Length: 371
Image (tube, rainbow, N blue to C red; front, side):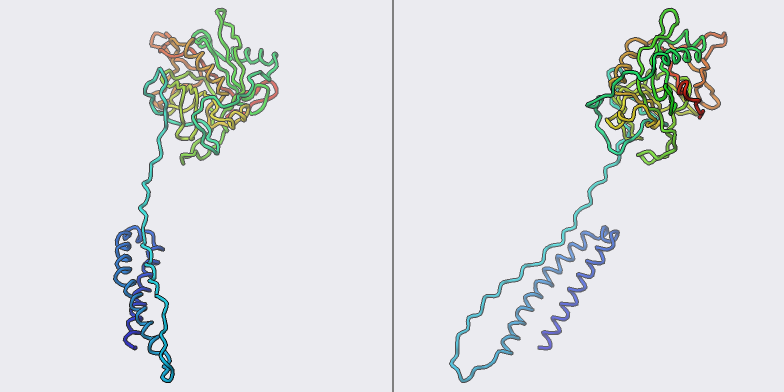
């Protein structure tokens, strides 16, 4: 009897040690990861060589103990007692350690080439578009678009045209054909709007479109890709980059679609800008048009962006003036200074005869604060 109890005690200690080891490994992920296979093999070996024999031995011991303490009935005739069959105990389940799933790296900026650009170079997003809480699809036109009717009075529209013409130098007026005036002001009758003017043969500026827009939030913030970025829309004069006109574009920095993206041709301190005019990516961005809501780009309704994109691509290709370039700072002028050769002649390059003028001016009701 004592030998049986000693054997059971040893089996109990071994089983407790095995399960204690399993608990320690479970609480130490690094050790558990390094010895997954060894633990699985050890537990399986314990089950087959220790646990199952222990159950069998315990069962035999229980029978022997029951026979030893069974009362003797000497004076009564022997009775045949039918004992219930002993059901075998089920084996403990195997410990299966799942394999870790592979980690898929984040996808870089996705550029969907259009007809004119079979392979599109990745953009350096210094101030690309805003990222809302949800990640939308690449749909170019959301289900509903805001009305494009102007809330600016006719008198104010005349003042916008006069103000724009006075802000242009003679060379800019003569050498560009389409002018986009953007008010980044927070308040005023002109605020957060994009005005499109076409020059006629007499040099007059005729209003084609007047759309609500969204410029930068004017903050220093954290982009969804984990980098610290400013959401400013800088004032100045800009041309469009003929090599970065995309019907479909996606910002990996802000995790946002940028349909009908028209990037500025502006190099700042050696980096090509990520500023662009493009369509709003979803209904949330459409609802915010008319307020400062982007990460620096100029957003308009998707239908309006498609219309402007098609207009520029089909009617305004040609030789455009080049802005002055400071080689010491690797920065292109956005103050309206054009490049001339040694003889004083204006230098031009193939592109689009489109000039974008961004200004913090809300009109007659606001004295704009300069940034």
